[in-house]
Length: 297
Image (cartoon, rainbow, N blue to C red; front, top):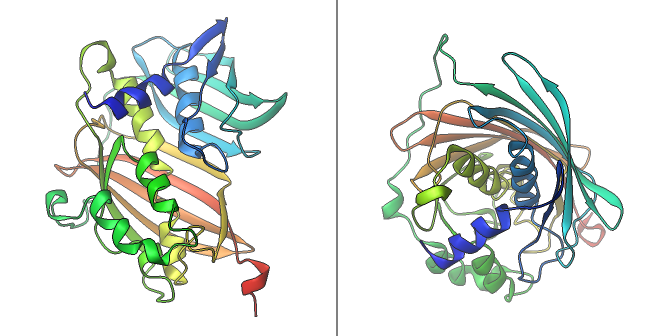
């Protein structure tokens, strides 16, 4: 297993400090705030720790309340809202410095047979034909507000093999196009042993789901995002529906689009497909999308 994947799995292995209370660390690379996908994944881990193994999350709904401090631990408290015959509900609050920074509600269900259909998987080139982050990001370093951000992004994504199907927003700033983005992703390495569990794959998928979701909003307006300094952005909320099993260590296609942006906010919709065409996850997120004052007409 790749060392960076081991490190990421370590971040998701929360420390129990009391019944239904857990503590998590953050990435040790320097960033302005805790990565939202990390907080969401850790909160889901905390919720899963209080639910029987045969019940897996089928949906989560969450809000980012305050920026997280990457230099301080995060405490997750779990409320056992309901334990029903078919569904289990948990509420998780993430706290730093005595204040809530994130709130998540998740619903769990045991495996069950039922009606089944899905949207077809969109076409996309094979991931092996696309450039890696190490190949793509340095090529566009001159576009960034601070070229040192390249090293930051590479370090942040070292555990994730993420490949853009088309050029990302930071490479196309100034050229609006269709509000749609596609990336292939998988974790760098194979999960094995006691770490190879359905919950681990679900939580890793949650972690990655916050990485490129708002790109489609930026593309619609020819904006490059915070990396080029033409947008002040942040995740405001995050919702996921888990439809079918998937492995985070095998290629997954993340197809995203943006139905609307207004009022300093942008809405993004995403679908995660397995390589053989099964719709595994649906994602929705609204994000802060403010144009810096100096850039306004």
